[in-house]
Image (tube, rainbow, N blue to C red; front, side, top):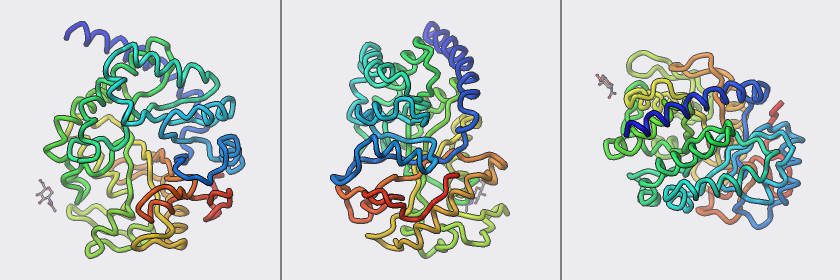
Length: 344
Ligand SMILES: *[C@@H]1O[C@H](CO)[C@@H](O)[C@H](O)[C@H]1NC(C)=O
């Protein structure tokens, strides 16, 4: 136990030094909004064209859900900052041994030394309270620890984190009352400790769209689309939009779990243009256009801090289901911009 703590402490110092260097490297692009590159379509352009499309549109960061070799090859020397996902199906293997983590980093990061990986997202939306992902929960922190050890040894200056969703919140309103569900606290608390020790952000997928369609009686569409005058919540704080309110509920829950110092990176957010309740090109365009402006301001709980955010997703993906899941793209598969978004 003690030896392990000292180890962690040493790694924290090493990582701290590296993260200062990384901050310098990433100064320009740090606060740009990125886009998730999902690949579940049979009509999508090849990775080299996708990377070119990111560059043409000044999209400076990309979230990848798995280390896809052709994409990593295409990203070499591109200057694009990458959030690299460890698929849930790989977690058990990475949790099993340090050697497995070393091999993963060798094959997916070191091999592509001109790719700027900034975060490793160890698992996506894993939660003991989610029947689809609960079986992976036991592997997340051990996999994070093993990957962190590899990263620290290699002085690679990459943050090891995990991407969670807002289903872990038991209470989310008013935002200040945000609290994790009791059945996830024993899962999340040690992860939060890891993030605090290593000064690493938590990745959170935030979808005002789903919050809105599941609570239409209570929530105004304009509030979800950033076009409301705002809502004064119990306690007296005024919220301009639902995105900020959800983000602050997550900050409040983190604070109650010892994570006051942890920054949140929004690792997914989006609004479908078709296929479901309140989906339309107009609504999606309004959502994305205003999102790009509003992430430049902070939330009531974290004022004047740019919110690092990854839009979901780059393309409409025709192999997803249900229907609305096929329409989250900001580009069509033939590379046309659906909303003319400006990442300037
Ligand atoms: C929020 O928390 C406060 C303090 O614990 C409590 O008094 C209040 O009733 C809560 N608000 C709601 C709407 O649950």
